[in-house]
Length: 265
Image (spheres, rainbow, N blue to C red):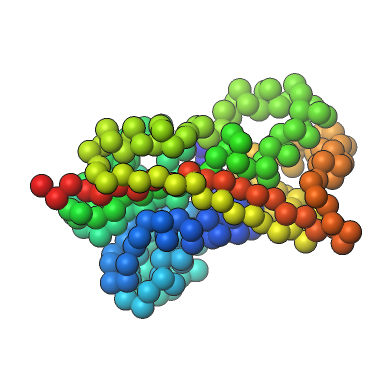
């Protein structure tokens, strides 16, 4: 899956990522003084939370997209943070270079997530943590299910075509993640469900970030609304849940998280 325009992506999904990153980091159990690898760092949502968690903690962020690496560097011009270009399935680091390797909302986009997890384990010190978390796109992300429901109502053929061309992220559950961690030789495996909610001040607060077209889904939504003469937005407005008198509303979200330790033997 390709992404573009890191500033637009930050407005679109950054607020979700930042909220999730705090819960994920607490679950991972990273400590001050450690050196953490942020695999697929994107705009740096997780790296910012890592740095804020301690006075001496360090983070190295890695992402395959140069514009995202540049964005993260400018957002965190701090000596304890470094960012570079690289791929999750071929990490450009020596064995046992980090105290922990984390991946926030990354593995679902990889063709071979197992290869990335094995690479994360390789560069993590014995006893260190390898962890990830992924949105429950199938049942736990109403921000997108509302969109797809409205799109299917106004242009079902366009939705079917989009799904053929861009299948979207892989649906993954905790059992599948546990099997993956076990197959990669990790120990002391633990899983959890991370729940959060996002408050939107208005419909525009929800819809405006889509207009940046920073992901295949948001670009499709903007194009479809134009093609249908605004019918998509009208359908979305009608379907907003728990709308308050002032126009505000909240949407929940759910993510799966897993962590395991690199064997000490």
